[in-house]
Amino acid sequence: MVLIKIISFIICLYTALIADIKVINNSGSKKSSYIKTLKGEKKIFASTRDFGSSLSSRLYENAERKKLVLYISGKRIKVSAGTSFLIIDDNPYQMIDAVQEYNGDLYVPAESFFDILRKVAIPGLRYDKRKEALEFDVIRYNVRSLDIEEKSNGTIIRINTQESFSDRDISSFINKHGWFYLTIVGGIIDTSTLNKSMTRGIIRKVESDQINETAQIALKLRKGVISHEWYQSHDPNEIVITLRTALADDTKRLKNAKERWLLDTIVLDAGHGGKDPGAIGKYGTKEKDVVLDITKRVGRMLEKKTGIKVVYTRTEDIFIPLWKRTEIANESGGKIFMSIHVNASTNRRIKGFETFLHSWDKTGTAIDVAARENAVIKFEEKKINYEKLSMERKITATMASSMFLKESESLAAMIQEELGRTLTVPNRGVKQAGFYVLSGASMPCVLFEGGFISNPSEEKNLKSPSYRKKIAEGIFKAILKFKSSREKILAQE
Image: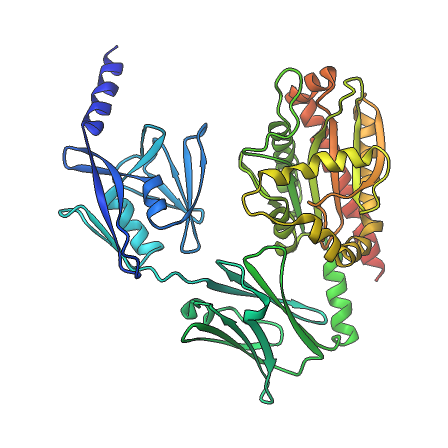
């Protein structure tokens, strides 16, 4: 009873006076904005949601876990109720007081929160406690950063932008002195960040410049190229440049080929998540929860018992778009990409597990499975035309899948074989269907369906931790078997 009174007193203390912090934007915007605050004795707490809105930042929230995530100046800032720790890009920073929850929002201790952000993420941020004013100088860059990826026959450059540019506003050329130039009309470039880009491959130096309303990126090449081109990827906030060179000598190619065979990184994708629950069973069991648990179990076993690096597309109950999952797999250097799901059917008697390979040539019941898993795109905020993507890039995606089809088939067969030994439900075998999440993955990739949550008896199984452990152990053993088979081939080279 005493504890309840103390908590009530604290709530009253911080909600007794509700005021605003005025936001002064010195980046050219004349529109004023305000951040709601909770004021107590010598303490001011600021609304996280209002702060994010004042900077027009992306915001994701998990109401159940009382967490908010802001994306500002390329930084991921996580705020959690009841803790004084602020997590910025996985690094903890301690504030003077714990975060308060009020009226569905999270309130941070203003002075220490803004001071940490000024030091770590927003140098132009200035907070005047006496005037209750927040001032910042933020240039709205729409050309933000550059990444270089070396390939055996050339180099790929990915330019991160804050908006999609028209093709007619982008042009490129190579001059006689070995400089590649890309110009973007309407681009506002973060020259400081781009000029510090890590160089590799045939890129010796990166220089960027803002010329009136045009952004220009110059890349100094170490040697000549056979061809060059640029295109906007399926992510509208990315421009991709490809610079093709002659293949490296046989020794280097053989070394690169062997390195590709080494199974040192696995990407595990727990299907659905966040606002997308996936399939829901008769007793309310959600696919997103079941598959996240199985995925983490597989990952923990790999991390504890092997030297394999595990990359997760998600480790929390958050929503990740389909295109982003494949991008994570490719950019992390994954050697296997496994998307884990559970199935559903209008026929509640159907049960069993199955593993799918990617193929645009869908047949039979595989059409229904692919349609259900692809339906997640309705939850995506960034509207990607997947149908257009699948047609325009169908050849490229099919080539990527075909290169690893034999290995994908082997992995899928091993998964079915291992689980067939331990599970008593039907083994539905290996099938093919067109899954957007697997499209374009440059590695062996499979989509595993661990049972039918629509079947009441299988739903009860999937709710059981011991049953999910059995599934995870079967997948783990299959991966080890697949790894061993690859290493045998490598030893023969």
